[in-house]
Image (cartoon, rainbow, N blue to C red):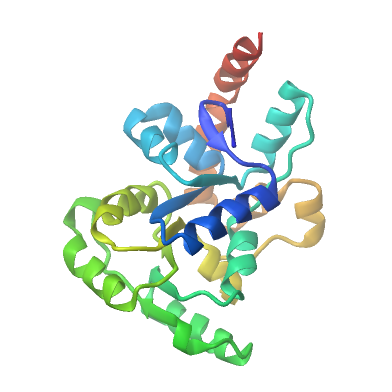
Amino acid sequence: MGVYFNINLEFNHNVLLHKVEDSIKSRQKGYVCVVDGNVLATTHQDDSYKKIINGSIVNACDGSSIAILAGLIHHERFTTFTGPELFTELVSKNYKQYFLGNTEENLNTLKTKFEEESFNMELFKFQSLPFKSVEDFDYNIIAKDINDFLPDIVWVSLGAPKQERFISKLLPEIKQGVLFAIGAAFNLYINDDCNKRAPVIFRKMHLEWIYRICQEPKRVGKRALNYLKIIPVIVMNELRKGK
């Protein structure tokens, strides 16, 4: 895992999965973050948040522009490993998995989809969360249910930057498991109306962010603007670091 734009990032998919699976096998608890433009922009504005991101077992890159910029600066070819791709890769494996956050309705739809795909439902547990600030959750109660189940993986779907702050507070309370800050991966997996993945042509051209802005112009558009504002700064800093 290298440092790009002051963030630990692993672009090699096999290495990333190997680190995750090693942590699971050794019963090491920790967390994985998925870094997109919004996450990167927030780390640039908040040092405490940056510390959380860099305290992970490993981080995946979910921003094609981040991969392209890092590749151009360092003269390498980097590819993304998006949250939905990471979720799809691991959810089908024979691990005990706990699905936390999002809404009761979406979790029920997710459960139904897993049943249709003939997954072993005894390995899965689902728990929605009320809408609260990070400080207001009762982490002892949440952790007790997780510890009773003892999952290998805990998927946390609360949206960035909330979910990363949430897992940093939950981690000390759990006995085992790798926590994933996975964003809208649940929604994209069930293909809900508000969170559909971009057509393949958009993804191949690294323009999925435009599709997402069209879906949610107010929320995603604001995040995209924050990211675009910091690009000149992070690029110049990365170029200086290279020299």
